Length: 312
Image 1 (tube, rainbow, N blue to C red):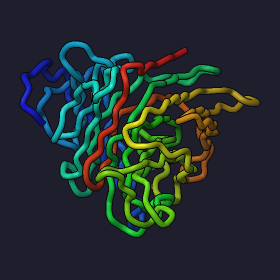
Image 2 (image 1 turned 45 degrees about the horizontal axis):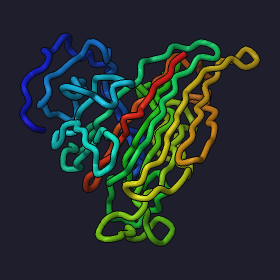
Image 3 (image 1 turned 180 degrees about the horizontal axis):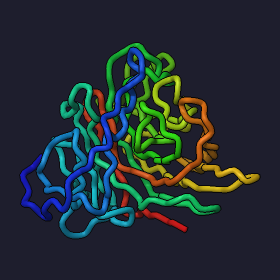
């Protein structure tokens, strides 16, 4: 990352809650969750520090921050890049979230540049909603013969994810689990197993999937599934709306995720089971956005200045 003067000193040290180990087999290592849980308000780091395996919460940018409605702070483990803003040839201001797969460290947490909404504790009919316009310029890609619908596929970059803590966390489950992630993958030939489709030397289109947990705390094909949502053209606007909400149904505490992406709307009823098949209770939720995960090449996801967060 570029050398930039320290904006704010470290206010407190990260408290480790234990290192997570992976129970995934073969290539089913799509996502390794946060290995520590920290207070996003109290752990601030200097810009210019580079370690993909530490929680690097820093002031996103000096001056006008066009994505500040979600948060002015950014979890920056991108190393090669800083958060930046540009019009990108349009009449609007865009926040750029860029990743370089060269910054990944084998067996460790993956490169990312993300912001997070405030946390919402469980309460009946309460929700957090994030909406805005997105463009995709690049998403991580790896040459292989694995279908893009497989949890073993290493292509793709997450543009957003919904977090959802629960009780009865098992030993190998994340202490900061994702319950639904929205992943962008370069469109390939041969039903998603062949070569990337290019136009004028650039990826022509991107397929967007929701990666949903089938068990809370789950990972790989035994705990998650990919559901196709839509296909978008490179560098073309599409609208994103994601809501995570709580509801008590027949005395049971439930969690739902409603989303509309590029005009496609669906509702996810989040599993109440953990990896030990125990019935759990949702405790809190939040939404992260930006760019997360790049196992090959580079990724660049743009969020426009109409980004908005609603919480009730």
